[in-house]
Length: 265
Image (cartoon, rainbow, N blue to C red; front, side, top):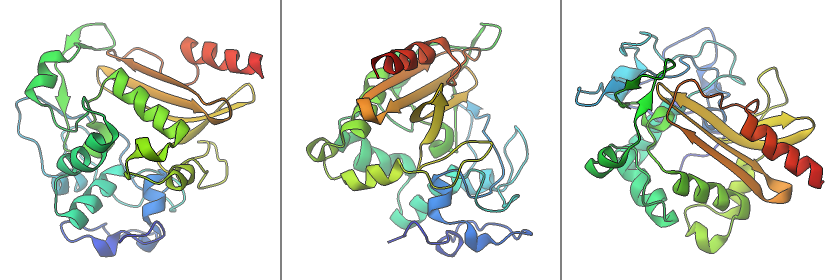
């Protein structure tokens, strides 16, 4: 079993973190999951459907068309990202593809039947059309870096995921996670910095003194946001099929939701 405090590199065989001026042993699972591992590469461009994807090792080595940047430790561990490395670690330890493991061990047990890390024929038929910043329709993209950018889901599934995070009901969690593990995810891993605080998979946001946790993300043509306010057991989920939507805590939907909570409290 890999512990949160364990360095990741010794567990890897298909690819290793390259040498750097920094200590690779400080790249632990906890830091990878909290975006604080000091790793390079922020975001991926993906590939058009129908094209052959690179292997995970090729992506980590910088053979993507978008930026040709390999994953390495570029700043002192304690800041930075790294979910593609987490994907590789999971595949190494389970001997399964990331998508298959997540479907069998997370999505199905949690009742997330419309979520997947692979584009199924059913999803292709039911997917919304993506639009670029000029509001022109664009083709959907697929990703080797599934843990970072490849989740396909619906507003219902993502809302249910948010609900599970808020309630941490052991019966609904169906042994996927323990309630105490979820609470651990929601605790800050490092002190506040210019980039804010991070939990395991979550980030901390502040709006006029109101602290919420969640995450935002975007691919070309898409953006998604999940925000949770634990004291009031309130959540906000936003999915948008366009590149021009402001999906951070400055957007008007978030502002309205946050002001409602502040007014009640």
